[in-house]
Length: 235
Image 1: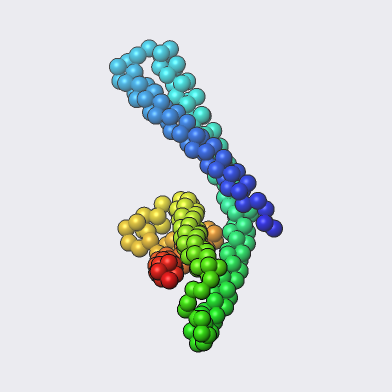
Image 2: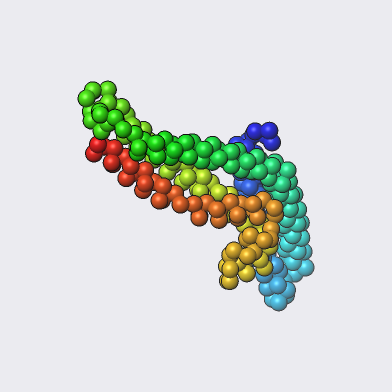
């Protein structure tokens, strides 16, 4: 795309997310060790251990605390990189993708309107041989039409399902950028208001995109296609 390779951007985001996960996991492990060391230091103090032993424990606690601070700064740095990728690369790519999908749906609509017009004209078509198979080529054409209708239905179903799954995954990931208060509000009361009105711009876009996908009457379309192909098969 003009805004860059979408797959490469997603790959970089995944790599940075993995680094962030590893950093937080390591930091949490260090924090737990630090808590145990602090508990040990308090126990030593209560039991009146010698200063040399307590100094060693204090030094260990101090070193672990320094490691925790480094892990926090590293996690913050990675988070900023992820947010920069999200806003500077992913956002323009999603906007371009949506514009492309809009053009695709527009072309599909124009094609379907043309087909509908043809069907309307066929209804009034008068010919002595109309509705009769007097050549094998007619049967073959009908069989091919049925096969194409089945393929059309399969492709349409997979197209909508993959698009819906993609936006659900993207929206789910973006909601993790919400502050805890907003996230708590969305879980406890209404997920629509916070997810649709707050957070980064890309989250707002994806929220409305997902809402539009959920309102899409794709099941009615697939049912109609199935019914149509069944009628052609009977014919």
